[in-house]
Amino acid sequence: MKKIGRLDRPDNSGSAQLFTNPVLERMSRTHISIPIALFLGVGLYSFYIGISTTSMSFLEATALFLGGYFIFTLVEYLLHRYLYHMIPDTKFKDKLQYNVHGVHHDYPRDKDRLAMPLFISGLYAVVLYFLFNFMMGDLSWYFLPGFLVGYSSYLGVHYIVHAFQPPKNFLKVLWVNHAIHHYKDPDVAFGVSTPIWDYVFGTFPKK
Image (cartoon, rainbow, N blue to C red; front, side, top):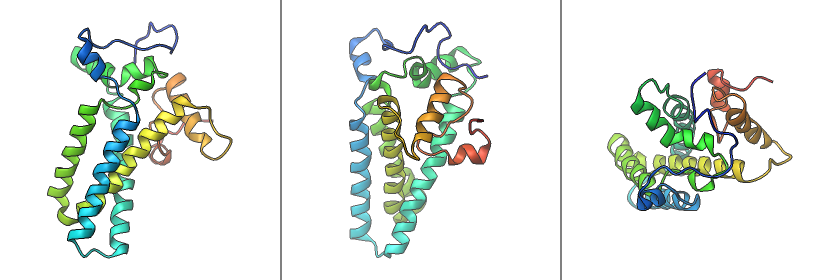
């Protein structure tokens, strides 16, 4: 089993201090609404650019948007499984894993650390903006919004799963899977916003 978090944590309440510098410590925290608003804003701007500068048909634009959303769900799964849960076989990897994700496993109820800090989220948005534009040209104006809506959906679902009780409907599977990932087996249920890739790659929790 991959190590994730600290083994001496007696419970999952409270919050961790990652930095002794109060400015850095404050910057390591963010309200979930800030990155969601940022990503949706960039996505909306990109969509506006696409509409005003291209002659893409509605069907093509919709397909690109949905493609961006779909690709994000795969990226979400792969990052969670292979980056956030990397094997910490060096001191650098151990510290990186803990600061990026292990601290969340130690303190899953800390709502200020359910998303990347604002400056990292902003960097993500800028990099994705230029990366997709470089790779896809005008197609990126519709693909990027789908990707960022997917990212925003992931952030929203992740926050809701940790902040609220599970609903009595088909969405309950997201709560149950994430609870298994946190409290029973961190090597399964890597999909947060959708379980589809856990089915595909064989990491869906066993009943």
